Image 1 (cartoon, rainbow, N blue to C red):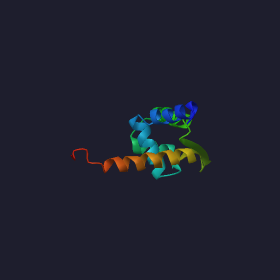
Image 2: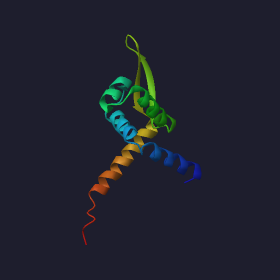
Image 3: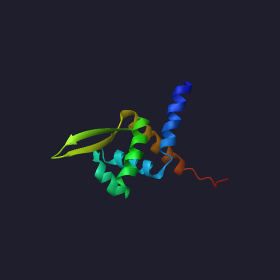
Image 4: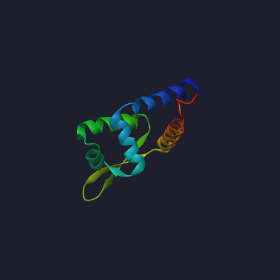
Length: 105
């Protein structure tokens, strides 16, 4: 693995080391195309703060935003292909670690 690839991977992990961003990514994973307003409601976060956190996730190429017109302009979020694979790998690894019994001798 090249240093640049490793740094990109570390940026992704760093971006998810925040409760709001991690929850946002998981909501977007579960509900592709979720709107900005629905994300704000489900996370219980102010819209300005949500916009900041979504900007961090977009900068790491985990999510993408698709503006749509439905009477008014709304932003809808999806994981990028790279983001989807990253989250699926992360969840898969998490499930494996949950099965380990560290108290076993």
